[in-house]
Image (cartoon, rainbow, N blue to C red):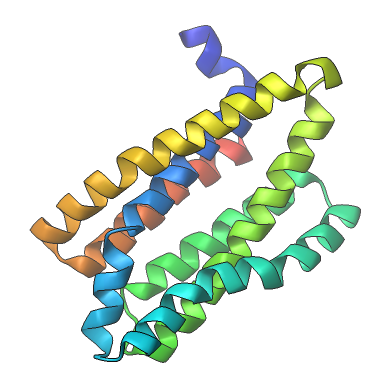
Length: 181
């Protein structure tokens, strides 16, 4: 097990992917409730929740352009950092418009991270092993999103909705540390 952890690809690719998915999963039970605490309008709640995928859509093209000029690890770090800052900022968001802005930013961070992560894998993994590598990535991502909501709900119920945002951002900080090593 120690050999696996010490492998640079595991630390820079797989473990951060698991942490990223876990941090996303932490927010699944919290975001709708948080949006509902800011407005009574179901339509506005829907807009707030759709801001993240819109941010991913908007961030896809700039992510591709950045990857033409910069190392995929640097773009991964930029994406996770953007997601981390935007998620932590939700703790302080005074209203729904700020939630929407921060979720757009988080979605763009997801786009940067997701595209650069796949570019990193394409460059680092032999073609004959790429399917296995991406399959493991998918499994770890689903595992993180499976476990994250359980802990996110527990944190929200015990410590408040906004605390889950800080916990998610803290998990992202660990991922940033692992990638940057």
